[in-house]
Length: 72
Image 1 (cartoon, rainbow, N blue to C red):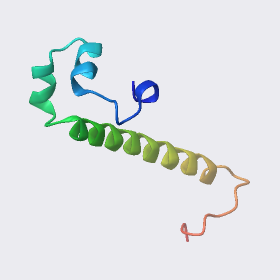
Image 2: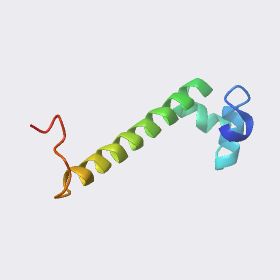
Image 3: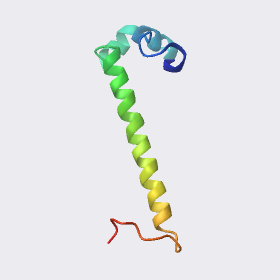
């Protein structure tokens, strides 16, 4: 939805409708669209962090990998 409309045009009511809940239900969880967008960003950053950690771990576990500067 954000890719189609942009953050400025994003609507919490429309997001609620798209996922099949009432606007009132959405407002029980999020104060406003900014609150929802913050939650989405937090989840996205958390997922990205886990992916980066997995990638670093996979490289560090390779027998031919150079030692990582922070691994001692």
